[in-house]
Amino acid sequence: MILTVPTPIMADDYVLVTGGAGYIGSHTVVELLNYNYNVVVLDNLVNASMESISRVEEITGKKVPSFQVDLLDKSAVRDIFQKYKISIVMHFAGLKAVGESVALPLLYYHTNVGGTVNLMEIMKEFDVKNVIFSSSASVYGPPQYLPVDENHPVGGCTNAYGKTKFFIEEIIRDMCNADKTWKGVLLRYFNPIGAHKSGKIGENPQGIPNNLMPYVSQVAVGRRDCLTVHGSDYDTPDGTGVRDYIHIVDLAKVM
Image 1 (spheres, rainbow, N blue to C red):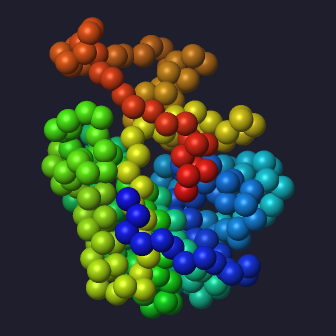
Image 2: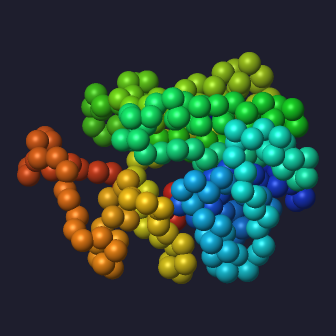
C-alpha cells in the first residue's frame, strides 16, 4: 500500500536499510546496489549475521557500510544519521516469530513498536521523511474472503507479531497524515522463499527455523532429523495448510 510516493534521492544520498543483514534485507541490499544506490545497513544481529553482508559484497563487488546497532539504542542510531546523508529508510528490523510473540508479547511491542518510534523520531530530527516499511499479510488476520487483496479489512490480528506490524503501519499513516511532506509505503507480503541465484545468501536463521522452507532445507542437508507437518483440520483437500509464497528476489526487486 502506497500512502505517498517517496521523493527521488540525489546521487550522494544514502538508503538506510534496517535489518539489512537479515533474509529480506540482505536480498534488498543486493538489488539496491545493482541499481547503484548508496546503502548503509543497520542490524542488531539477533537473527542474522554480518556474514550475509560480506556475501552481498561478494555478489555486487561493492562495499556496504554496516553497523551492529539496535533501534532501541537511540544514540547509536542517531550517530548513523549524523555520519551519512540518509534520504530514505527501508525498515525491515524487528522480531518476527509468531509463536514467540504469543508467549512474549511485551518483548515484541517494546522491540518492534518501540524501536520504530525511536527510528521515526530520529528521522524527524534529521528531516528524513521517506520510509518504506516491511509489513506483513498478518495485518489482515483470518481472511474474510480469498484471495486477500489490499481492500481486505485490517486489524484483526491474532498474535502480537501481527499487531506490531499493524500498529507500525498506523504510526506511519498518522505521520503522513500529520505532515504531508512525509512519504510512506507499506508492503504487506505473505511468505518469501528461495535464495539469490548465486547461492551466497538465502534464509538461514539462527536457531530453529520459524518458516517451512529453511526447515525443509536443513532436513535435506542433515542438520535436522525430520520435518513435522503441523495441522490436519484445515479446510483443504487433505487437511493440511496451504501457503502463499513469493520468491525473495522478486520481492527484493519490487522494493
